Length: 319
Image (spheres, rainbow, N blue to C red):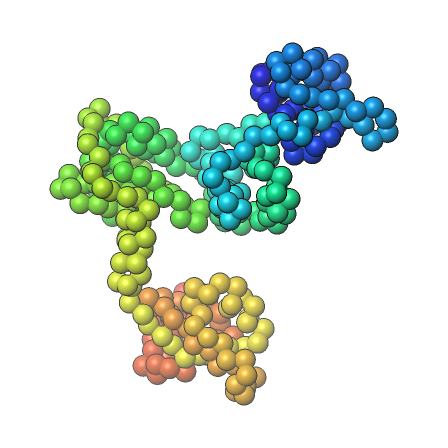
């Protein structure tokens, strides 16, 4: 613990240049006397810490005592300051303790880059989670991680989006964080690569059998290509609608379905024309019905009857 604290003192002094005993004690949650003993220990170990007296005084490191990240340019260091969401790190069992990891990185930069990197750090924060995170965590993730590090096969019980389930043996090749969700990329018994949403893995058990990781497999490249393939395989179904101005904010909160809202076009009965896109007709019907009288379908005309019939079915349910 003391070694960690001594390192933290050095990092703080590198970042803040000068700090009082009280400031250091408060930051590290120890007593002033402990900080004074730590300063003696740093001096005895050869670290050039200096005590400046007076109102503006405090502890500082001699100017020549700096550590650097060799070979990194400013643009490179900016990328290092964009860290994954804390929850993602916790899911992987990575607990960041003590000083923020970005503070440690900042301490290692040369003075010429430090001020620019500090401004970047203060203005960018990555949060990939949802507004309302799920309370339950998938227990299979820990088993998958362990097998991933050991190159060991696992048996999984997987539930598809349509509710059907299956059991299979796979060789885990990597985990991918997409938004707030985890995906397992694995190789099946036939040697083909597959992706599984971890939240749909109901059970994961180690088989005790190791496998040889395929030569040349690159997780990032595979995932990028699989995303392109998936997006290209999705059907596209467009509809023309009229929307009430009161729901424009809700409609455009996400661009998942909205292709275009023509704000400049003349209103029809107080409603504005818009183009929406969906993967299937039923998805379009359910979405339009969900807004009640605030959305009116214009094209395709054949879908109007289907919306009317489904609306009647809802009314009949409550009569």
